[in-house]
Amino acid sequence: NAGVTQTPKFRVLKTGQSMTLLCAQDMNHEYMYWYRQDPGMGLRLIHYSVGEGTTAKGEVPDGYNVSRLKKQNFLLGLESAAPSQTSVYFCASRSTGGGGNSPLHFGNGTRLTVT
Amino acid sequence: KNEVEQSPQNLTAQEGEFITINCSYSVGISALHWLQQHPGGGIVSLFMLSSGKKKHGRLIATINIQEKHSSLHITASHPRDSAVYICAVRYWDSGGSNYKLTFGKGTLLTVNP
Image 1: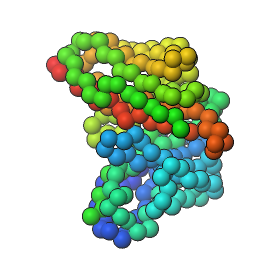
Image 2: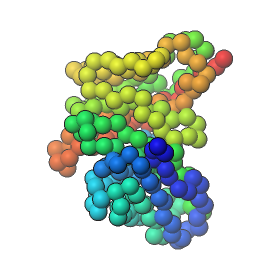
Image 3: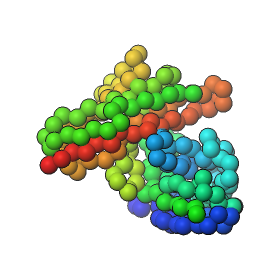
Image 4: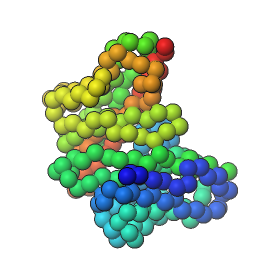
């Protein structure tokens, strides 16, 4: 099993450009999440999904959109990139088992730089 | 909102030493996660616990629900243990009527040979 796979691993954008980050998981997990990690701060939730076709806003959703058309994929889009979106982005997934306390599985991250 | 504080922020140890990393939180939780992140790498879940103690190899995680505190211990530390260790707490957010997960800022551990 590959687990959680993020593409691309690195990307440099110019201000105003758009891009999509892809997260794919092969564990049949219902829940998927997008986080950003910035120096000196804990991981912060951007958007999340509790199942195919559903998405919800997290703590820092502005400037991002998401889609979950297939259960295994969760896409994060930046329509008009800004330097403030320079960060490392992590995707994570988990199952619905364990009474809601199932462990998180993370991807290896995407390092995005916006100039 | 649940405030999560980790200490220390940075920790340097010699190979073989016993390591303790602490995590405190402000609001009652349903579960606490300990995660490991190697430099430039992904994030791996080490433990998830809601009470008591868990052990995996040289790693031990404990939690005291009454004191809202958890510790991660590493016995016989090794340079390959060098990483950032992150605490995260899952709790019911009554204002938003759902569960939330709040992450600490992490503890950077360096183990020298």
